Length: 273
Ligand SMILES: [Mg+2]
Image (tube, rainbow, N blue to C red; front, side, top):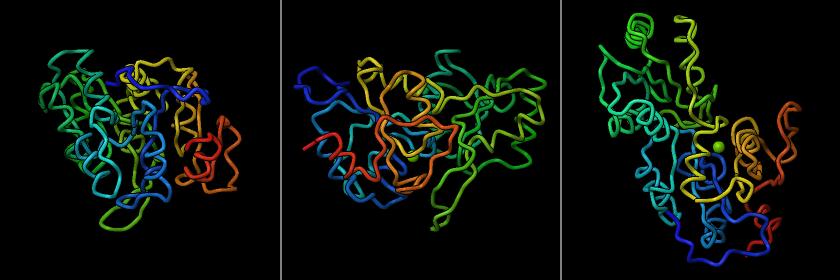
C-alpha cells in the first residue's frame, strides 16, 4: 500500500498509474525497449500492475521482472486475474471449494483462500495454461449440471500472444478454454479479468485513488483500454504488443487518450523525466 509521503507531479493530469505487463513491459523473458527506463521515470508516482495472465503468482512475476532487468516490484502491487479470482470467490463464499483447470499459479492462488474438491466444488474455475482435457471437462460439466457449481473464467481473452515450448505462439486464452463448458452446460461464466471491472477496482483500492485521477497503460484496446474507460480511468495505448505503430485500430474499439508507438514515446508525450 502506498503511503502519501511523496510529492505528486503537478504537471501530470493523473496521480497514479495502472500498468498492463505482457506487451508493454516484456514479451516472454525479453524486456521491451524503453520499458526499464520508463519504470525508473515513474518510480515516484504510485503505480500497480494489472494482468489478465493467471499463470504466475505475483511473487513469481516480481522475480521474473528482476531477472530480466527491472527493479523488483513489491509483489502486493501485482494484481493477476488468478489472485483477483481467488479474492472475489472468498468474498462470495469464505472457505469455498473449487475445481480448477489451468496453470499451477491459478491453483496456488485459489488454495490461499479455498480448498480443492473435485466432488463437491462450489466453483468450476477455468484459467489459462495446460489442464483442459476430456476428463477435466467431464468433471467440470458434472459439477455444474448435477451439483450446481458456478462456472468462473479468470479472464475473457480469446487468445494470448505468448511463448510455448520455447517458441513465440498464439495460445488459447481463458475465453476459449471456458467455451466448451458454456456449450455443454448452457451456463454463462462469471468473468473476472479485464475489461470486467474487478481487477481495476482492486487496483484502485490498492492505490487509494479515484478512477478519474488514474492512468491505465496497456497494449489491448478490447481489454486494457475498454475496461479502464468504463470506470472513468484515463488511458494510454502502447503499440508494442497487440498493435504495431501505424496499424489501424478496429473501429468498434474505444480510442485511448494517448496513443503511443512505445513507452519511450509515451514518456515524451507525458513530459516525464
Ligand atoms: Mg498486454
